[in-house]
Length: 349
Ligand SMILES: [Zn+2]
Image 1 (cartoon, rainbow, N blue to C red):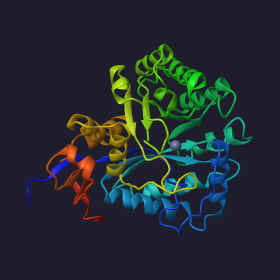
Image 2: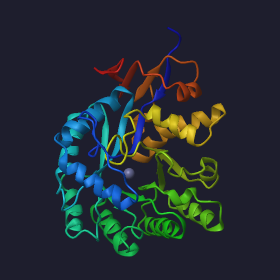
Image 3: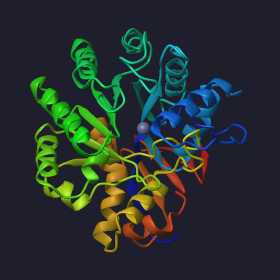
């Protein structure tokens, strides 16, 4: 064999493992015409699953580890509709695989927070029952209460000393307002580097002075942007974000759930999609996507081990060049965590 090509462990910085149908029977999906449709299809699907969160998420996590993923930030649903069972299930999976993968759990108010009576109390309870981070979703677009929603999210983050990771799908003026307010509160609480915004589709809007102002606010607050290169969803211009000093990480978002039949546990696949969606041509552009899928995600999650692929976390490939990996997507023949082999040839050790 030629010299192995070793890359840092992959980091899935934004995933919804509790919703996945992975490791279960084929899921027949219904059409959706709006975000509200998608959310109600999701709830209906979750309530109908025959297999537990532990079974489905466990299957996804095993596949992820075998493909070289050594850290994952999981957005896990809670709400009066389902209680905290997904949080408990995800925490059990995180515990079971803790020697192989770091799983951080965000309590994610998928079915609403202020607009969903009982959800605020459950969010606080979730932080004591397995979730490490406070989640949020479209404070204005979905919840119609920008400040009320963020009062809860940042209030709990401050009260319990937790990080926050907030979904913002809104574009245009609403999206800018939400992102700028998140940046303002992050600065005010001294939470620089501890807040992530998922999707942030507004940052992929057409160039404007307001977009530039928003990017500067994000950079100054040290906010991480988690992009997922999903279907036809907007992906921000990586050059523009880099120019403003905005940090970017990468996730899969949902994998084979009610929202989409697509997705795999592999972050190599996702790096490929990011490269494809951002029209990567040069080695530098392709390698940037690999970095975003590995070391940038690790920095976001605060896992230094990933930064050293030999003594820390790494995935071993037979390939000529890092840039080529992103195009060819070969399977890792070995995965190490903390310098110890945890998977080889697609199987956990
Ligand atoms: Zn998401």
